[in-house]
Image (tube, rainbow, N blue to C red; front, side):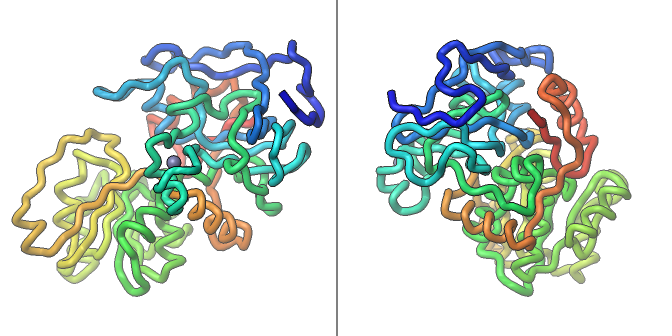
Length: 358
Ligand SMILES: [Zn+2]
């Protein structure tokens, strides 16, 4: 084992760290704070001293469990992160101990047809940190060298650890799947959510008109501040009626769906002829009804999307670096506040991201 060491943990085989671990599914009480050995960076791998972990709804699904899906428990939680490279394994050329980095959340084999085509999210070995392999909610994490990129200097660690998963998801939905074009109109559900906030910014950057929904008047105002042209308070207003009015009965070209059962039918009805609905989540349930008549008569496309490619993340990174996309951090908490953070995430208390700082 060849490990070039920087500082802190060094090569001390006794070195330990605290990790937030899920051993069985359940409420926030199943999150355990365990003392574990600091992992060693093998060939081609990088060890990062974690400084910040942006939380995602995915974290709560891993904790609660998803019917019909088996997570490889025990798992260290956390998909996003930023920190400082602490050690690199043999053959690593792209970074050195001391480098400040953003951690990319998806790993893949790197050599299959999907990977070499630049669609690593379609690799059969694709694994999301904190979902199918140990994640970032720990003092240190070891990832393949391809999973770190320089931290944009303008961002704090909290900001740098809070954008990869949601911006990648929203980018792949709008750019790759929906093929959003300048002049089109987009409906973005839950502007205060991570994916929603990213989608508002990306759609605006692409030259689209953005209609967002949000749960409170404050979140509506914040959605507009992020770039939404209109914001619908969905608790008091039927968003489908509002979309119809706002578009002169035409409907929108693209819907960014991640709510699921509670909104799907009205999302489909909100589409204009030739419209595209892209879904990346189903927080209110995944069983929906769909009228095929609507789909073919109106020439609609219903598209699924999960994550995106590392190449897209490099593009996003450049736009973040240039200040054209920005992570929205609502609140930071220490690692031992993770249970509270999960509660607040599920209650949708905040506009923007909750971030654990270590
Ligand atoms: Zn592959």
